[in-house]
Image (cartoon, helix red, strand yellow):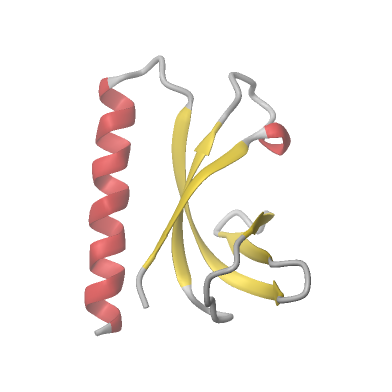
Length: 93
């Protein structure tokens, strides 16, 4: 089941990348990450991407440490990733 979920996430990522290439002026891009930390009091989910960057977003859904997610970002039109905004998070339980 995990192989199917990972395959599905890769397919979604590839589709998203194709859309981004087709619309080169868009500011959207995707990253794959792994849930790293969960703060249930603050509803804060922290994940790490494969460039070892930590990102966080607020969410009150059930998450588990180790969940693999695909995150769509808006680059905000800048080269610096530290001002990028998370648009959506896709996961498969």
